[in-house]
Length: 204
Image 1: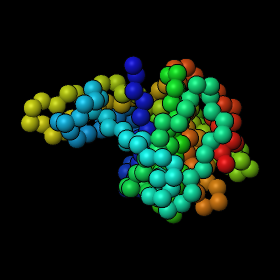
Image 2: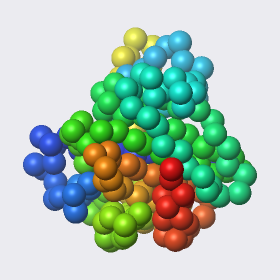
Image 3: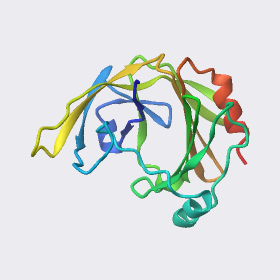
Image 4: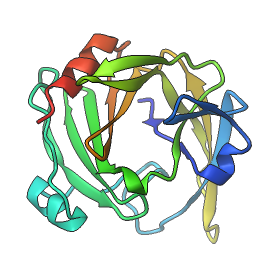
C-alpha cells in the first residue's frame, strides 16, 4: 500500500522555494528526504507517525477554543474516525475514513497560519470558488518512495518522498470568516475536483 503524506514549508524554508498562490509553496525538486525520530515503543510498521484521532468533535473544540465545523456530504462509505489537536499549528484535524478513502479536514484561526503546503515542481494548481470565496486547489501529493528502518541505537531515520500528480490525492484550501480550512481527499484512483468542492460546500 502506498503512503501519501502532506508536507509543509515554514516561512524560513519557503525562501528556498517558489511560492504558489497564497497557501502553497513549490519545492525545487520532485523528490525530497525527511528525517523522522524513531520511537522504539511504536507498534506501527511505518516510521511516519499520525496523530491519534481519539478526540470527539466536542473535545477538540474545547481544546482549541473554537467551534468545529462539520462536513455534511462525504463520499459513500466514509465515517467519522475522530479528531485531533495539533498544538504546533494550533489546528484541529478531523479524519473521515472508509472503503480505502480518507478525508482529512483541518480548521484553525488564520492568525496562526505560519506555513505553506509543499507541492512538487510539476504540480498544477488553480484558483477555485469555494463557498463564495476564492480557494486554491492542487491535485497530486507526496508519496513515500522508501524508508530506512533505523538500526538499534539510531534515533532518526530517513524517508524518501516523490511528488506524483496522479497520486490519488487532492488538496483544497481556503479562508472564511477568520478561519483557514483545508481538505485533503485521498483514494485509490484519480480524484475529481468537483468531488472535493462538493465536500467543502457541505460544511456547516
